[in-house]
Image (cartoon, rainbow, N blue to C red; front, side):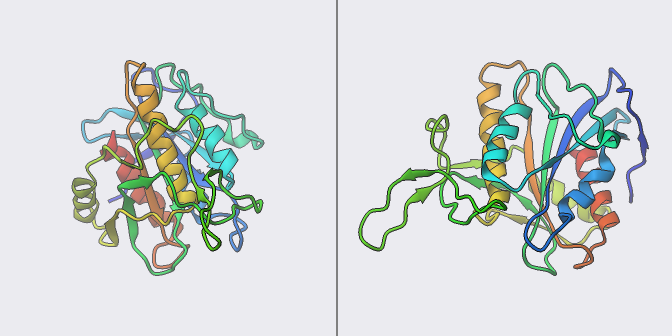
Length: 250
């Protein structure tokens, strides 16, 4: 069942604040399906089960490792720093001083026909593919042996974080909630693919922990994989599913 929503640029002072990111163009996707689903959420207000308002801000992230590092750190700062969009229609409401109440990242799966996947884990190392600009992830350990590959992933300023981080969101209960609402094509995952999607997931989980160490409020983080348009869900169906996730997650 779709969650009712209304568009608003004036944020209710009692509203919970949610930031949702989608990825920008990449390879065969001139417009990334994740952004197609996330963009309609921008500046709308939905309601929780307890009828509390939730204001949503949408943000498009370049499919570039360096951009992910810079922007993810910024959105977790206190107060969060959200870049000014080039499109005036995507004007962003002033971020909440004490941080967002929930940050949801969305990316597209490479294989068609897959259900929506709730990604529970982010890994620190193993990012061996180039990004949209042809750049590789940082080398954190040089190759050993003639046939060895360098270890790539999170290095500077992430030394104190573990090799794996997990979302605090109860994905089992969220999955059950989505299925109860009629979305049968949803599953849980602990393998987001060791590419840009998992990269932003680990980065955001780490930055949330970093901020929580000194801030009054911790921001829960979740990454969701969605299928390409029409394989099998339409963009509208994915957007409606994200509304349910936001309503439940806050």
